[in-house]
Amino acid sequence: MDKATLWRHIHAERAALATTLAELDDGDWSHDTLCPGWTVLDVAAHVISTPQIGWRQLAEMTMRNLGRSYNTMIFREVKRLGAEQTAGSVLSDFATFSSSTHHVPTTTTVEPLIDALLHHQDIVRPLGRSRAMDPEAALVATERVRLLAPLMGTSRLLRSVRMEATDITWSRGRGPTIRGPIQELLMIASGRQPDLSLVEGDGRALLDQPG
Image (cartoon, rainbow, N blue to C red; front, top):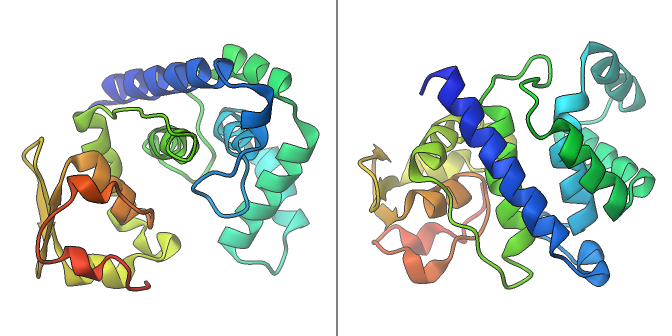
């Protein structure tokens, strides 16, 4: 996927997330998400913080978290952001930065897509809402997430199964098959629980196994 199309998908998903957030009640902002320990406010603030992080901010984050793992650093920074933000300030940031084409230094242009797609799901699913991903965008995100499996904690699972999309032409891996819409395969590849009613195959039994 070329960069112009990639950014169109990122901007569309951010805009859709902003619409979701604008519809929430005050209590929804403190609701738990699919990310353990993260509230809706935490996740939303994190998504729209990434277009604002340059080399200086990255250096400051690193200094605040010296000696800590990458995932611990992200969790601490998310909670710090959440404590500093309100629903109103997050919505204001979405209005200002949703169309940005900046991404965090040292990352690729696919990471903002992953953030927008997955974190939108992290928010809506626990709230009983739904959001369908664009299959082409989800495919690009899934390919990248497979490379990031060590950070996602899914290396063992992805080495053990064959994943096959039912809504777009795509398959990867060897072993028992997990078959379903590409957005559910993205959820699995990132270490999230998919909608099990949409997933089938003899590899489905492996989903509860760690790593």
